[in-house]
Amino acid sequence: MADDSKMQIMRQVQQEAAMQNARMLVEKLNEHCFERCVPKPGTSLSSGEEGCFKSCMEKYMSAWNTVSKQYVARIQRESASGGLSL
Amino acid sequence: MDGLGGGLANVDVTRLSDADKQQLQQFAINEGQKARIQSSIHSLTDTCFRKCIPAGTIKNGKLDKYEEPCMRQCVDRFLDANIVVLRELERLRQ
Image 1: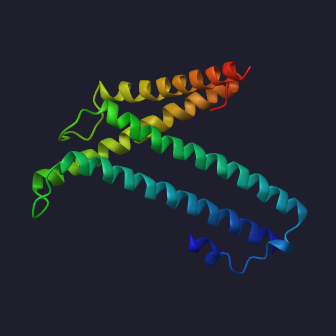
Image 2: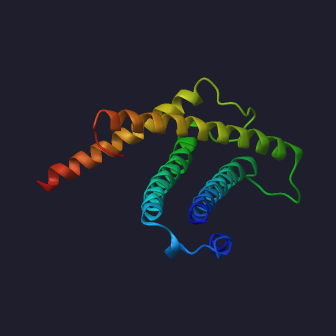
Image 3: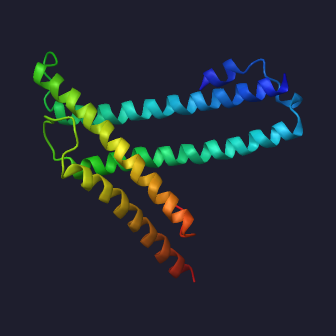
């Protein structure tokens, strides 16, 4: 019973964290891609704008993955060498 | 955030054993650290995307051979710069 509530809390916290992370990614992605792909908003989203948005989304997510790998590798290197904690 | 309270309404933390409480405390510390790292990754992606991906319409979804190394270098140089700031502040403090 006690173990069950502990697991429940942990699961809930992890779900919230994952949700927050996804929300942040969507927000940033939208911000960047709207800026680039829709410089002058028209009466509807053109097919060109939509195509740009799809490429931009993919590119932003690749960029996010690259940053994530590089940053985590760097933290691990820094903490292994006992350097400044970032 | 109301999902958190809602889903855990039937959990009574006072009934947890000391070992469980301690484990949860450590879990919270770890999760907090993970959240800070995630937040840095978002902010770094934001900054470096601006610098590395040229302005204007995007035609290809893949990072090209210039953009990918630029993103990686951007992360490392940002952190180098951060260390310079910390060292300089440390020096001024003395």
